[in-house]
Amino acid sequence: MSALGLDEVLFVHDGPYRRLVFSTSIVDVEKGQLLDVVPGRSAAAPTQWIEARSDAWRAKVRYATLDLSGPYRSVFTKTLPKATQVADPFHLIKHLFRKYFVWWERNGQRIYGYLKNYEPITEEAIGTFVREAESGYTEEQLVTARRGRGRPRLGDDKKFVESVRLGSSLKSEAEQRATAEGISVSEVIRRALAQYLHSA
Image (cartoon, rainbow, N blue to C red; front, side):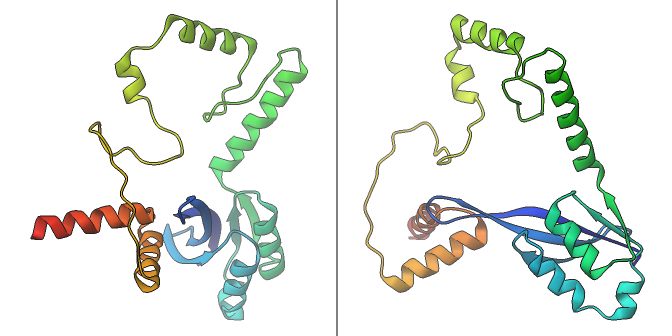
């Protein structure tokens, strides 16, 4: 293997508040093959993983690809000092866009922020947003608008809330299943109840 890559990945939304839990993917870039996934996005876990490989294995790695993050740079600098560090195209373009918008702002165009696609929010863009809001939105536009973070939709029918007491072991099992599947404990309970009712 001549090229090794590190990249952070959102692993799961954990717990009732959907806390973001990240992991690091370790990839054979040349073959496009996932080698392993280690917890967190700090330098510790990937450093330990690479150091566990043999000297002969590490000597074959000529290129190290990363997203320009400081922790990953330190991993490669420590464990693969002879490898050439290469920024992956996605993050390289992302950083170039940011630098471009900084230059744009310094040259007279005031920028209030950025959209998810990195498009700058200028005076003109704000004017467009205001005109859209003043003209109003149809019910269909509001219903079909993409939801942000928060509870997932459960359809358009009326909803009810029921309190359920769970023993410590059942609660623990529900939390483990929720973490494994990247869903909430409430969703685990809903699915279990639906399966029970449909099988009766």
